[in-house]
Length: 241
Image 1 (cartoon, one colour):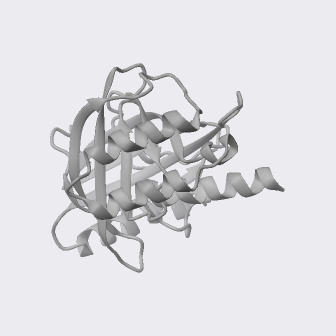
Image 2 (cartoon, helix red, strand yellow):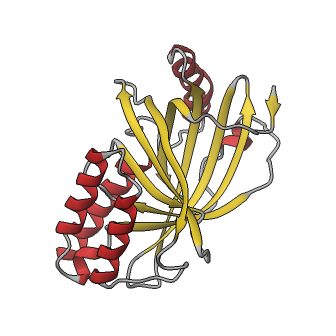
Image 3 (spheres, rainbow, N blue to C red):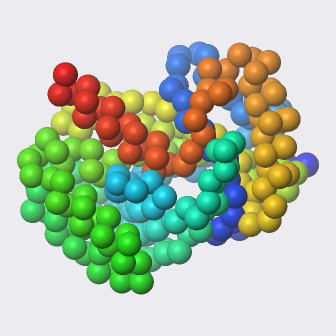
């Protein structure tokens, strides 16, 4: 059965995949499962591409805001199938350094990182990763993919005890008018035994996708941090070639 989502899990197992959006051929979860489409949630999240993808650090709903929610999620486990256990350990309203305006100056980035670190006092490992990120920036070109702005259009419903999510993501290429488009699918299963989550993904999501020959079947399944770190690495290599 299908229901509206009121209280998303703050911690628990999830399965997530990302794939490129292609005109008129992008696999759609709600169509495949014949689900009623909920109201679209639109927001912009800004992620820090920390070297360790088990830390997810971002500004939530940051576009055009004087304050934004600084969020930190920590991945404590990952299995061979790609299920990951995430725990949201910080969600705090903080003055947003750009107020929604793009900035590329190194000094401003360092000021932002310093302010963010001030709110991460209980998480010294994450503070260390933020510092590594800052130290890796010496030129404006190196700064471009250290923080990634994602414009999201998200659909989310409860279904058979799980939370299903489909999000269309637009990532503006730094210093360009061009953008990249992706779709993310996610199934959240809460903090219990992940066996039922894996079974649901295999027998419901992936079986439907295989019938439609969706290209993401067999992809590497992981969360936003790993996806964005990999994307940043690919884009940086492409630009240097």
